[in-house]
Length: 123
Image (tube, rainbow, N blue to C red):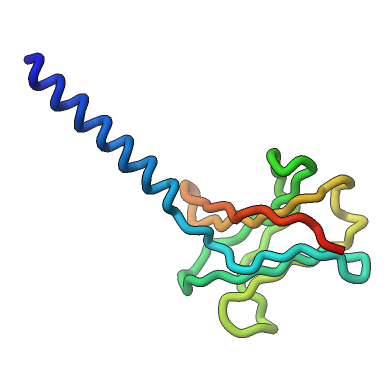
């Protein structure tokens, strides 16, 4: 009985280690995320290396780079560009004051979402 419990425990630990390893190796879904202020409008642009259909993208902002809130949603690729290029534009006066950091969250379905690395606003 003790031997069986040892085997079950070892299997569970290996499963947890494999799951943690997969999380760390997950690639950033976003390529070239940029945030800028153009003509008093916040503009975020990014691309993705994959051609998979994404459900939608959440654009998120943060004051401290740790706690993010959603400031907009992008439903598809930018029709003015080729490939997998995306953009979000919002009047700076409509954005919560103090936001300095931005990221995009690729939402694949109700249970799966992947956040990009964060960028700061460049003027």
